[in-house]
Length: 166
Image 1 (cartoon, rainbow, N blue to C red):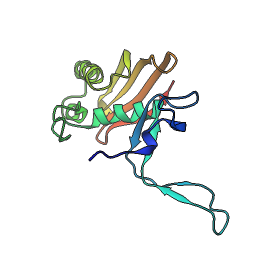
Image 2 (image 1 turned 90 degrees about the vertical axis):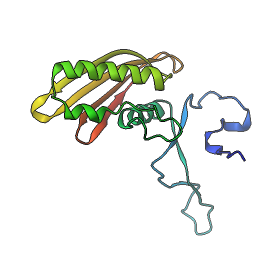
Image 3 (image 1 turned 45 degrees about the vertical axis):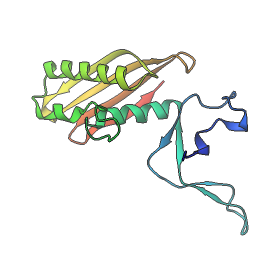
Image 4 (image 1 turned 180 degrees about the vertical axis):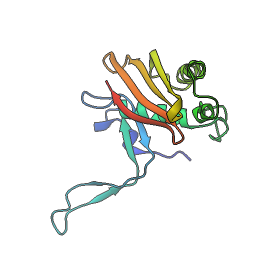
């Protein structure tokens, strides 16, 4: 039996994306409740949605964070998925390790995120803080040739996205 998630379907029932719609739409897995309608009146219709969606750059940002924070074997139906960047925190924080980290990031993005084309990865090692600062520059051709910049840090908390710009 197939499950239909209406919030992921194209709007206006046309079967294709229309102007103003998003190009990419993924499930937001934070499970926050969102209301549709107005609750100002006593008997107003107030419908709760269980699943929200992320669109375009937010969807790609979440996907990249998931790739970086998932270790191979954690995703049941795709056991090879993930880059497991946390494992590099138990090695000396240095420039050679940063170079290996950059290669792992590049391979993981090429393999698991086909929506982006990586242009440059800039990694700086901070041995005193036991962390790396990572800047990833990508092109997303289907989003009007926009350039995407993922900025994050790899520390004991894992890979944390600090900002995304486009």
